[in-house]
Length: 423
Image (tube, rainbow, N blue to C red; front, side, top):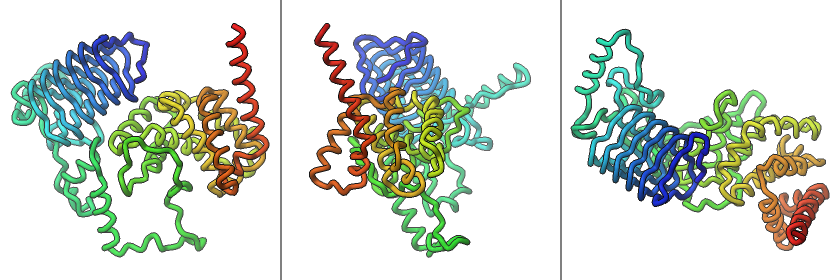
């Protein structure tokens, strides 16, 4: 668990914080809490004996004594009162209150917005500017009257959100309930995807067989679709879901003008919902960076390294925080290795000359991949030489420039050991 030190967050010594996650600034975690694989935003108050598992908790959230929250999202400023239970897949909107002892059913979504202006998917911020104090008072009374006591309790605030029924015809035959669940954390969407795929086949859509003006199939998918990246998922992977491809798409949509923390939250949300691993996240981010670099065969090695480094300066904190061990760091190397051996203009450039070695060197110099991770990866490739030296990744590994880099790493490691012995 990574904890942001700026802001002096406090975790009581009797509480257990484990697994991958983040803790923002100015948070307070009380006694005997159990927090696992959870992201906490800034200024959160977690009281005593609280259990959080696989959650995303936004800023200014308060969770009362003995509350339990599983695989859910708690938006800005919401309150979970003492003894409440938030079951998996729930989303509690900004400013909502779940009352004391309430058990919120799986995949529930709670909001403060009025039904006629509800837009839950696009905006969870329920704060609105009012012209005067009178209008503020009327708005508060209206919200109180609209609160669903049967759902949030008599001391709660908010109502159960339902998707507009008029959207049914656009859901590929799914009900709004099925669609809502499939988009929630902790849900296994395998059956939904299978149903959607079956309906598309029944419709007789021959789009994939149509050719473009150049007589070639339209390239709708990534250059790396269908490629196995070789990193094991410790939690299991859902069938028919290209986890790395979806994570890569999220990375490609990210604009560098936004804080990198926003991308981290998106990746974590998808990771939790699909039971993915952080190796999947680092793999996808690396592939996205390579694509953003726009690598061509006409680029010089110096130009390639300069362009890639310019992206790393912004993305390095994300890769470092998601690399919770050597496996995640090795996944970064394997992603570049896969790009270099997958053909196309990018693969041709990365597998020729010194381009591949220079990128490996850059990852080491920028503290993205450690010496230990490189040497562990090298050991795995050495073992493959005896079994199948014709593999493209083995041939890439055997390049003289790559071997020079690894030899330099090994010598550097030996020098460090000698210095330690002399002290």
